[in-house]
Length: 433
Ligand code: GLY
Ligand code: MN
Ligand code: MN
Image (cartoon, rainbow, N blue to C red):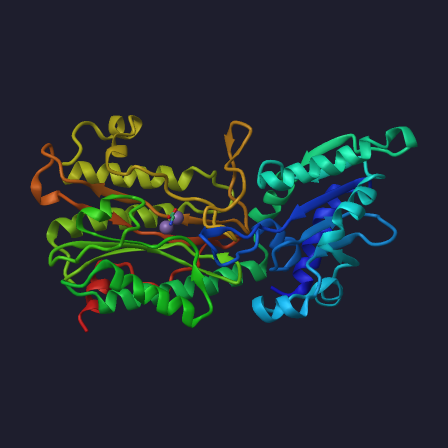
């Protein structure tokens, strides 16, 4: 993402915040993994969305109309010794020269500087409850202003939920965001294709997962979430992430894996037979899910409401399950009663963006939101049939999900992950190396 994009976002947010308002956003904290080992740092999505600044220990301040600078960044000072251990820091001078801050200060001086910047402001835009430690510091800064009320200082009169404004902005992706997401989806599609090509009975799920790590890192991408690589019965456990079982001849393998590239996520699922050939039952279930997915994508159109793709998937899946004998009764009643929930236990999609389950409201008041150009959603129906005495054995442990990433455009659905095969004949052909 180039600097112009970040500048544009800050401008847009500042217009909403208006003069007299101030928006304050902290960077993500460093998280400990075990003893003195830390997780690899990943910037907070809201903070990164507005700054493009990927260091921890930073606070961004937007104060529209402020004479001596509207965009301020507090960040770590340069430090030769620490940089020899942990790598480059930009420091306040770099925050100005490389990241477009109007002014920048060492983070260690924030207690002395920030309350004074807040003082003339009547509204503070801040996301409460995200980082408990930062909430306390915000309260301390406001209290330090209150303590001096008798000396004529002001305190802000209103606290406003910043996430409400920011997350609505993030829901609508710009052209460069869609292009970043398409790149991420292409890398993930390549990795899924590799997985289909290398998979053989006798391998372990983690060996297939390794193909994803290789393909993602080759492109400077990483996992957007923990990959799910589940064969046989494991395909029916929605959030299976152990990925340590052996692949049996005759199993289906469900893989839900997507990379994050340059802070944008992809989220793709494919299901295929470990031995390269769908059994008749696996194919029957697969074809229902595929038909449901295509029907849902077809409904991922500007002007339709959020739930229309899901409704379309539910109809196809219910009809299909009735046809193969796993549901019995009148079709309209089965649909009305949500009977397919027995096998299709999640919803058909979610917003996708900087976060895999991205921000943005799904309803406006009590009504489903209408789809608009620039929104990106996943479309991911599934059927999961765990072993059960009530179900004929030939259907046991068939778990199928097909998931693509779809941008809503003025010209209809744009499937960002379309380069990846999903027709069962194409999958079988790809697997016959
Ligand atoms: N990979 C998480 C999901 O599909 O929602
Ligand atoms: Mn998903
Ligand atoms: Mn997924």
